Length: 295
Image 1 (cartoon, rainbow, N blue to C red):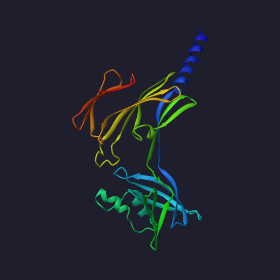
Image 2: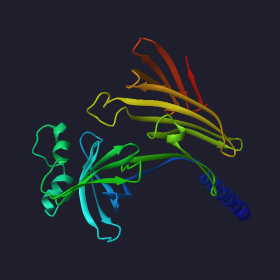
Image 3: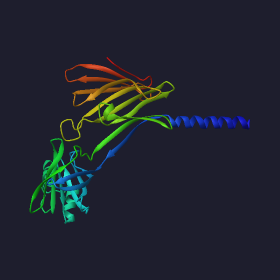
Image 4: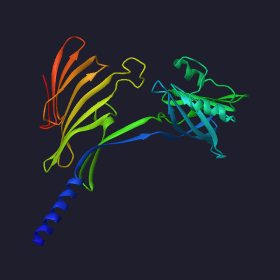
């Protein structure tokens, strides 16, 4: 009897380990800082470090902090500023001036004018202003005596990047990653609605749900983009089949009503999808049998 119990415990332990090794999930990471290189006046090489501080109420503009130095000196000069369509970065000796930028403190009453005010402050020791143009970032550096052009040797400064990956873990040493910005209709907003892994491969149903616009105060700011992906992989993680059904889109003038099939644990949903031209269709999301149907 003792031998039987021991054998059952060993078998149960192995089964649990195997179950833990096989899984499907979304992995997310964000990039909130960046080092960039450039020149002032085409002859003074500089290195700049920027990091995200806070988002403004419009959901897109933000404050940034960091430093820069001349490559031949390497003495860090602190910076604080804002990024709307362009970067405006200051060096202040007065900490209160720097804090007012960081905290979006402004005397103007309209939120639409706050970023303009913060981008045009006085009392600085020096200031950078630059934006994206002609496949690179360029603009000006200035102090109270002169103004010089500044160029950066990058075409991508993004302190708000959000990256999501679909991860298929077939075993402890066997993972496959799929970058959702290359794989799905949107960069982010994914969750695993249902998944199944066996010896034949893997079936994954993903739901995407994200705001239609980053700016909550603009058109479709409160709208949603909602849909589902049905993905079929073989045992090596190669994609065999791909299906996408969008059920709601403020940008596409699509809205829907959803009903849950009883006793399915929320894994079977029926959407009545309606369009601005009065067309309708019915989409059934079945995370139990792994089917998407539309009619």
